[in-house]
Image (cartoon, rainbow, N blue to C red; front, side, top):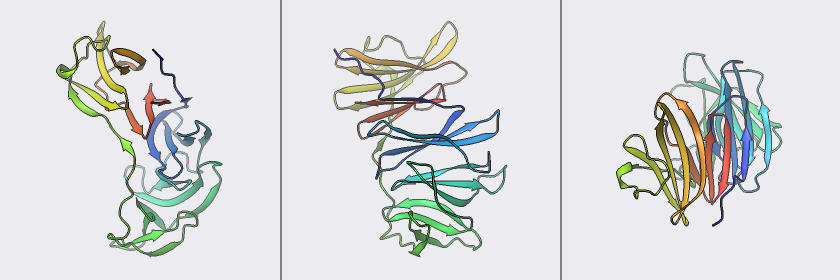
Length: 253
């Protein structure tokens, strides 16, 4: 029996807030928020090679910023219009390998990624008029066409919710707490995320089994106050999960 080991293990100084995957380069873009320091930073790593490209990249605005998407080697960042609102403004395009700024536009805002590139709009005009943009230059190319510029599909697979009663008795060392577990079957592996209650403490675990054998286990969160959402996603053969809210781990399965 071969035990699995993490392909990537990278800790950050803050809470992993958002993940975005580039379908072209298999780059994972990460938004990290440190509440105590009011600092938002960004990092990227490659799910294919395991290389951590950069960490701790920050924009001049320390807090009111975030990641929109990663596409064709470019990570698109944004600012917030107001501290108390969700509206975004500006697009800052950063090379996802070097963290060098490629272009920026403070009149545009991001809408979504299409099969032909990012779809954007000028925040000065109402109603919003969507345009297709060149991700490498920031130049708007033409008006957005919903028929031609279909949303870009991705290879991200999320686990399904499954009643704990459907698990094979004795399949895992821990008995699930609550009625549901997160479940995914991939290749020869079964991946399960579940909660346990031990000595009054709620914990979240990740298990990977192959046949009747547990080939990987990690304690994701301990002494938590409530049940957590799904703990992992699968992109092609890369299993990506967050540990203790501040560490990214990747396994090849």
